[in-house]
Image 1 (tube, rainbow, N blue to C red):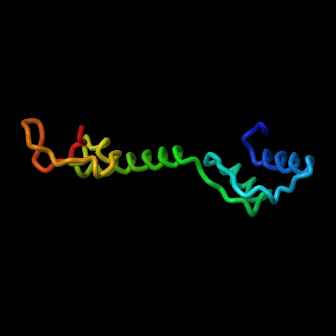
Image 2 (image 1 turned 135 degrees about the horizontal axis):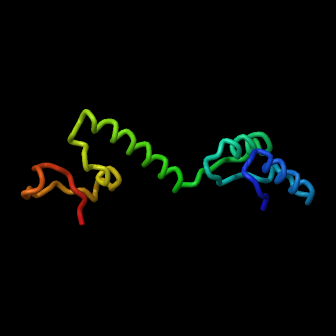
Image 3 (image 1 turned 30 degrees about the vertical axis):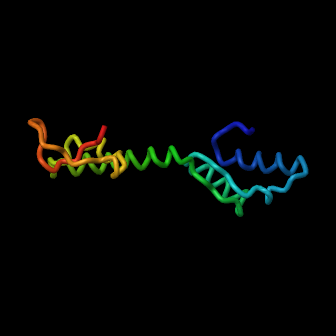
Length: 112
């Protein structure tokens, strides 16, 4: 394990491998957080390696972007107010509302 968060960490890792008689070319994959420093270091020192990003972080960033767009759009389209959690659900988990006093017909709601 090499400590640090910069591009130079990958140079240290490459030197470690070479110092132990291993070829950096044997490294085929990296799974990393989205970090421009790590990406640059991998591309420079391990050019043949594939990069995989952490799935949970990708989902988090996607959800944040979706929420930002929803917030901007609800300024002009009031129908988007109070829909945040609907956007986070799988479509198959949504049901049409059976109209009650507190909702409008045809509004989608998360099913229980």
